[in-house]
Image 1 (cartoon, one colour):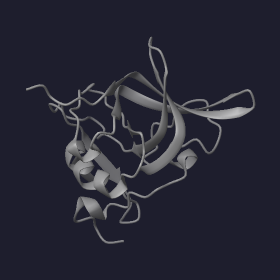
Image 2: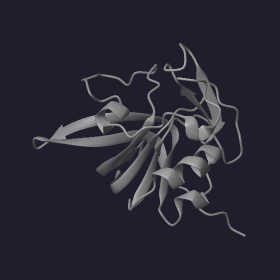
Image 3: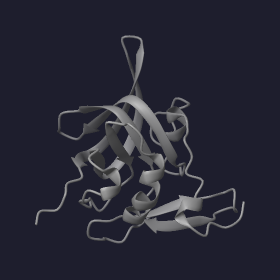
Image 4: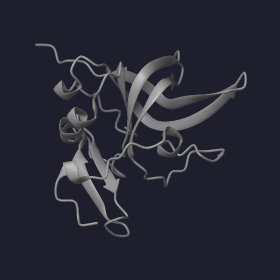
Length: 173
């Protein structure tokens, strides 16, 4: 694969949700070195927060991306990093989340009822709504995110845990 020259050239592929969220194999803790990215559609995913009520989101488009290792504090934005081993060992590309969403959401959107951004947000950056999401609610975390596969009553349930979850809002004014 050639070096990435444009955001739209990223191999941001649809993946099986268990692979996307690194849940294919049992693990006791999330893998801090996991750098996989992509998108998936799910019937239901639970957004779980510290000290808050969980929220089940239905018919969701999941966008799994990674913030840079030590992201700079940016008002209303997060710097993302995509490791692309197909180009070269340790090869990565950085882009602002706002720009990434402006390019990729129009390519991915369909009839989902929600968009869930799966990204560690260590600076707890508050994100504005993006016009690329249209009227579809966009959920994002404050703090780090951990993915889990819970089993209850013989069924498997996807869960994302973060410090808290927010819905991107249009700015007043």
